Length: 460
Image (cartoon, rainbow, N blue to C red; front, side, top):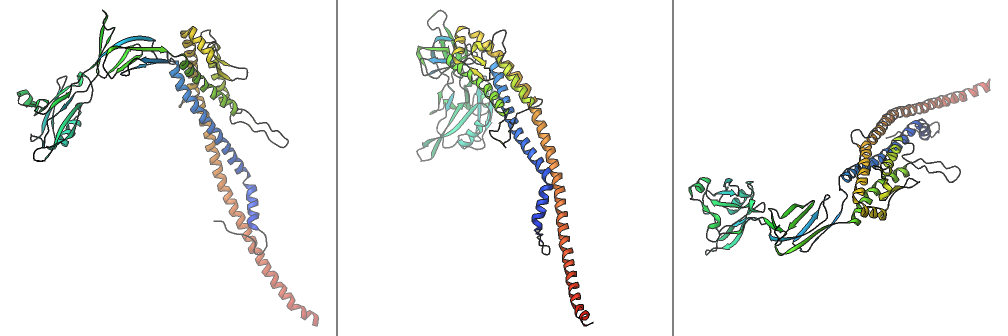
């Protein structure tokens, strides 16, 4: 809290006087603060630009891969068959017959009021012949289900309410289901330990009266070229036939006795859109750099020119030039303008959908090669400038931040000096008031003494 120093004797507004003097003293500190604020704005814009370039590097790396920008339309004549095309897919048309879908093995026990064995010991055996003996914490079917599920053997279990017995006691069934579908997920479950299973005394849970194997684990099965000499059966444990054709996955969820027609065709419109979005991302970065590098010229007298946040920044200017060159320079002698990518005389990057679509129809391989070359060069530029360790933009941001830190240190030292100066001024004016008060007291005393001497001088 400040101390009021308004002059009781001098009549001076010492608070205002000290403030005015401190305002003058603080001018260097204010200039440093303004400079630090300006640096903060520059850093913020550089960080935003760096983030955009880092994202571009990631997109460019993906776009540079062979056929990465290919787009396809998939078709299926049955709702139970789904077709998915990857980046490396090739156009295809085929017929398949779905003989079976993938199922998970599932067993339901008989109804129990309580587990018939104490302690409750079960043995699980998978399709590979591997066994696991499990002992539950209690005869509660919930505890038994929990022990099976947490065993990590690839089987989950639940206790399911199954009404009541003749005495009205609640009953429960144990439902066990394989974690994975297909024949590989099939399992057996016995009441008893492994030794009991080997001895033949263990009870097959699914064979008890009232129990059942509700679903037998099976693989999905389809036939290609059905009814011909080339007929081929293909199976899948999951129901998804990965790479059934190059870059094409097929998933079946329903049996179909009649052939299902599936197809994959190149989608020129989607390809143009994907390529255009990539070019637009580069154009946006170039546009942001241009706007940040433009100075605002005053319209009238007395106004000042305002510089852009990137004006005079050689690193940003170099980035702009490198990105533009990466996009506009020929790839193996082919100009990017031939596939619709061009930069006009004002430095504006554009993408021509119609020209790209025509080039794609005329020579898809040429378009892919040119665009892959562009993406590779853009990736190199983007990584050179935005790498989080030694990127040029990263270094520029670090340098600016170091300057801000140095300015902050200077401002802190100025704060100490100004505080000391203010305290000195306050003491000086406080002492002035004291001295003026003393002088005023002395003046009053002398005046009273002179007044007392005046009559004596008159009588003489």
